[in-house]
Image (tube, rainbow, N blue to C red; front, side, top):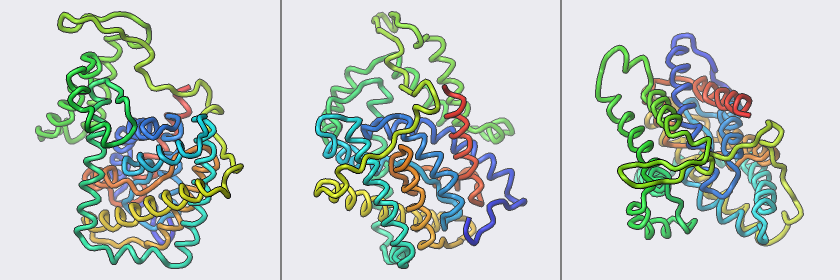
Length: 353
């Protein structure tokens, strides 16, 4: 961390706890955002690992949590589709090449001192951005909650399909989602030594896993739920590579000088950079110690992070405001929590295969 202490002995225990809680939150989010973006599930985990470790070590903010974000879903989907020529894998490889260029542009932007212009943003812009991101997350995750895949990839299309999605809810999946959500909400309403020591996301994950094991998604079979039969099986599980080497996808630069690549590069750069800088400003306002970030260094950190993601198969990384807010709410005081959450994501990658 340039200019900051990574480890402050006074806050180590709270930072470690916050990092672990963030890992529990980030793992499903990284996977879900990648899949919603039309990218492999592994690309979201890679982005979370690189954002949490490299982004925290070289960035200019203390409490930012870096990774894939719902606010970039539409941008990534459009970028991959426009470069695919009918082949999704080809489109993703070409998109990664664009992410590499975006990373380089962000590095030069930080070196040129453009990061400080985020301070000119009025409060209304920040509040509007946070509300919009929250709305996108709700809209995108509700179909996942009830086990229905929308027929459209657009945000407005998903909104239009919402009545149909809810009415055709896949009850076994919806039951798991609703129970986990109820656990998250109920756990924090009680204040005692157990609820303070055990993070709510950990309890929700364990409850969800227990129900999933009970329903036995590993093998294809029928399940009677409230008098209706449902077909369960591996198709409802997240598709992850069987070997670590298969997690990585490498960029293809054959179209990097084309007009469509230029549009993708410009869009990812503008949306990702603006959202990151504004989110950093918002996090600074939430910091209980009222510290300010180095916005130019944060620009450089995001650039190096995105360059690395583009080279090994990660979706674009930005400052993720929802996880950053959770980081502060959990008691984090230093970048250590970001690093810990990235390390745990890396362990998940190593252990999952």
